[in-house]
Length: 373
Image 1 (cartoon, rainbow, N blue to C red):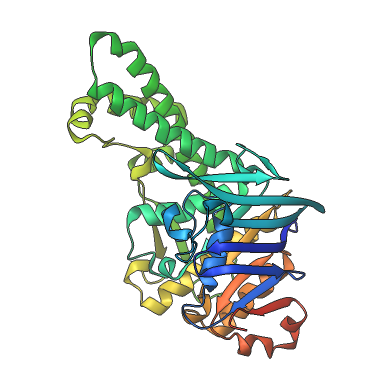
Image 2 (tube, rainbow, N blue to C red):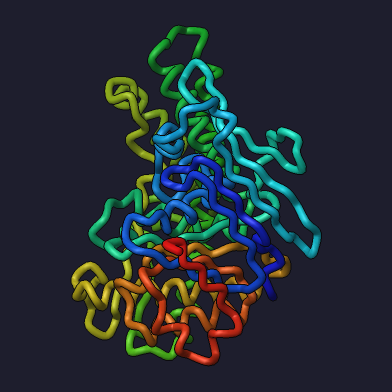
């Protein structure tokens, strides 16, 4: 299946260091070049904010406004023209002041919308920080997997948001506990447990797919296998989901006093982690060299691409920030070749990108844009 979404035009106004930038795109691969500090990553960030609250930089909204903006906040904006299933859609991102600071405003065809745009398409990104995935926190590894799942299952993000909402509601009830709260607390815990098991099961099924394609890759690392290490994840391998849900509900009840004191949910579906094992050497990815770890991460991306290939209605964009600096060039060419075959519009950043434009195969499919010029 081919991706049916692409950006045809992007306009930035007073966005970080870009006072005004207009890009018109025609090809599948967009290579943004420029010296360090020229604002290459800022362009990718502006796209990522369309479907994400904080984008690929996990930024505060106050930081994305140009420091040189002297006029009203309405002079700030991100405006894009998308082609989705061969239909054009104008999407704008602006900011509005509220009591808490700034609020993001999304317009579709000039009209303000509260709809989540990730129901139309998804955006997947890789940043340099992700190459240290096995040294990063458990939360960052989990988010890496969850981002992939969200790219192919739009309902998964909804369950993640519902889960966080129920967790927050439960803690509020515990902190304001009285005799009348018991029934409401039990109802919230039931919802929390049910949603948590849906999330765990979705992760389990996705990891199973990744492992299938990892074993199918032509690589010296074809003995790789991913495992989820959370207690609920391990139980789901042995017991029916309804039994695991009951176990989760029981743990929530047992931990009420503990959770009240700590102000957090100590036993949770989001306590999981994933480990990548090299079965030949019987060691985890975190014990491989830094270079090998980076290859392992991109082998996971290759497997993800294989999953994308089998999607019935593929609507996804890829943002690859500064990947040339930490990957072997031949490996990068393989990645680009796969993305082009899937017709996934891919945005890349590099200082020059000259070496890739020397490849005849890629000249015809790459829009090279030098923002220093």
